[in-house]
Length: 250
Length: 268
Image (cartoon, rainbow over all chains, first blue to last red):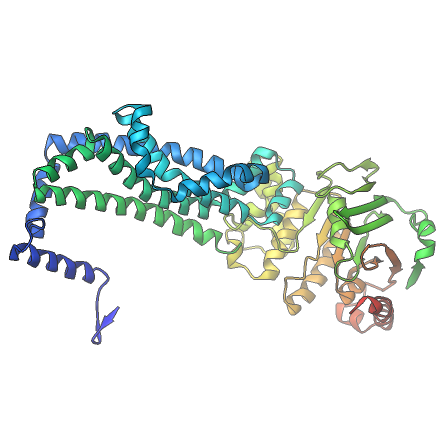
């Protein structure tokens, strides 16, 4: 990007917004927004506390379990829907309803079903992440060129080999895109799940800090969460780029 | 040039004294209500290159895929080396119009893929693949990916993959249609050399009359939908001459002209 003839580095806009935040914080017009520097100091202190570490571990645990479940179920369902029109017709409507449904509303119901503990959070992560993975996998499978499948059949691929040597690899770019979007939704899911259950992990801390108007710690928590979500998404994106490179000509 | 008319097909179906690799018996194909092929009877002599030629939509690719066992026929049967075809088999190898290469795999892995699916060990299959990569003129490109190659080179990979599995019958579905004109000519010349060298039965689908006459021992001309055998022609061209001499040969030019006169009525 260039501005007034000068080349501006990519991260410059971030710095501008950090400065704005700092100034608004220092002016003291809103007690909800403490200066950024105070928030960062709080963040450094926060990550060293046992409470945060335990909360992070619980949260990470629920998140990873929920994601693993939604990747396995999402890819399997997506492949089945992409390959078999009968299954596609049967499940398509439900997947499309759930992908856009306000799932937060369901969490209290899940709480009745799965209790006040981690299970509900895992299920929430799963419900947030799985649908987009199903849809993207389905699209990827449907986009696999027919000639590649015919090639596999004519050279004697078994049913199993046809899937894991050809179809899944050919659909990999879309499957990864689905997983990346699923991860972002999963982060939302884990926090919303914990907030509504509100007695475990990150949700418990959010609840604690916002109720006591401990804004430094509240924002520190938020920033750490954002950074983690962006990092995860960036990691998957970099894998995607490598895969897209090889899948470039299909 | 020997012209065998449609009426005499039954008599000509079995060329006297020559060994038959692929027999087509009473093949018909319906796509829902559309009749794609009607009662096709054909013999493909062993070690020869036979071309299926016809207007677009005449079902020539359908017939080739039925022979490959990739799509089922509505009626009739195919026999390869005397055995009835029920699906794809190791005695047949297919070369695809759009190459059908795996974009995530190197030239080496693509060429060796048929052998990989058969469960052959890595060293063994790579040695075989390397030989055919050399034969189709791609030595030095083993570690390249398909998107790094031109269309002509990609189809050479497809051809090497078909040779590598050592099938008796090679089925080529418009292999040069996605290759540019200059590369196509060179490729046709190389293909003839390989036909000579590999002693396999080739069944070749094309819509190019020149390509058919230049490459084939026998040309089967199909009529427009529903596809039936309209004409069988054996261009008797002296292939010992140089490629450029063949393309100026009177008998070559006459054959092209005759086929064009026959096909003209199918063109809108």
